[in-house]
Image (cartoon, rainbow, N blue to C red):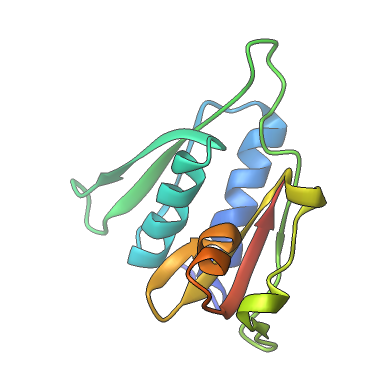
Length: 133
């Protein structure tokens, strides 16, 4: 098993690749932050659901990719903003709007992971992990 320098980026890349390839599901190594990201994506309607599988040697997270009724992928694109080598922090007033509100930003705040809209509502900033649209 390869050691990843950026597991969040790996998770998002797997999601993007599965969506582009038309795959129903994909699995990735489990971590709490990936579960939080999957929960946000499920709540916002970008994926159907996710499941944590603990039957193997290492726990994995399995995500069910969402498509429209016409078979179009729901996630058009996503972008990793803050990277291990260059962290991107914003205040509550600087949270980016994604495609004029059509997408979401995922922010890591002192109160846990949340969408940019939720962080703005609670008036807290944090690290911008990703933009999804």
